[in-house]
Image (cartoon, rainbow, N blue to C red; front, side, top):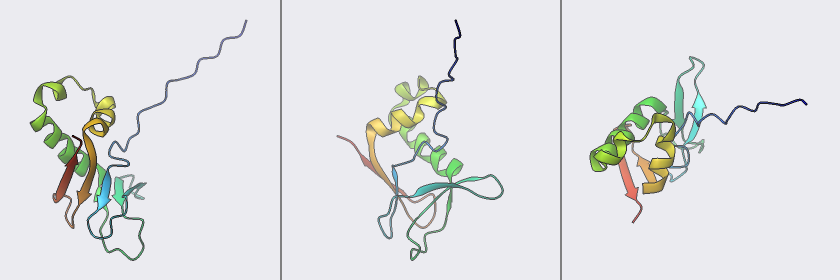
Length: 108
């Protein structure tokens, strides 16, 4: 009898996928890799001047905000489950010109 082993799906390396939106044109920011290998989020609207943002930077900022508001719960969430935790409590995050300019729309 032949058994095949299928690896479990790996977590999305862009855990804010679907949550980040451009403050200027409203488009959902899309994940991308720079030629240097850096993970980024960028606006798909070619006419928008919104600069690319470092995925690591904006993800860390969003997680820090979540953890500040949900300290006990955040301690128990492993890194691979951060996307699920954030999707459960955030409708969207709007990104301004600088990555530090994040506006959160929390679920009720």
